Length: 349
Image (cartoon, rainbow, N blue to C red; front, side, top):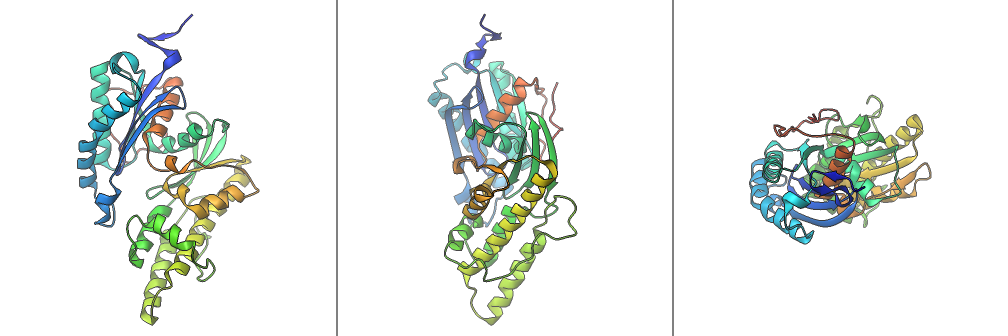
């Protein structure tokens, strides 16, 4: 017997995913748990580069401009001509992120849900990053460890099962990607600084400069990149007083220190949990040195997302929303954005 949800057959379950947590607007249509029918993204990187970082008010205004055209394109590319009849679910990033940016995505998704009478699920952005690997690696099974590393996040999460997550460690100050960007800015490199440091580091000596490792007074599996960032900036200022900064060597050494800190925490997480399936996600997961270190490590089975899945994207949001819906979660239409959303705080009924 064919199972039906309303008038929508579950053998063709289509999820419209919407992501607008920071400076990228993304819309995707996913069939089932991982079949991508369409995926569009509007990047604001060039617009914010002049300011050396994301300007929240500017970001939200650009989301407003992009989100409806992207949705129309995504639906058309997926062959969805009647969303009210063909869509089974709308999944949208509810938080964490920038309040104005989240508000655009959430309010748009709620409007669609009401107009089309389609269920809606608010997705935790961090759970989305976890599901980027689930989409990209069909062989990845629970439980696994996922390190989310980006400009705003550095966390280690134990994913026991869909919807069952334990935060093992998080940054107590700067995120790893934030440290990359701030050091790059002091070096006079363009924004975003992480990819530029990665490129220059390939031409440098990673042992030319010494930087501190994980601080011994940081509790458990938590991170701290503020001290490393400050040490790097002080080193830059000291070098400039004596002459020029050997940029390639400095980038290589600083990148090696960041990667060393990340790998150390992953090693400790594997040892403490006994879980040997390890995934990474987030913008810094595209860093070549970090990817190489994770992939070549003999202490675990590594799962690296394709670089296109490292950015904030609607595919991961749709996948996480689909999984949440299948485990019985539903969001109320009164759901609002939550810039400080943590695991376990999603509004469900």
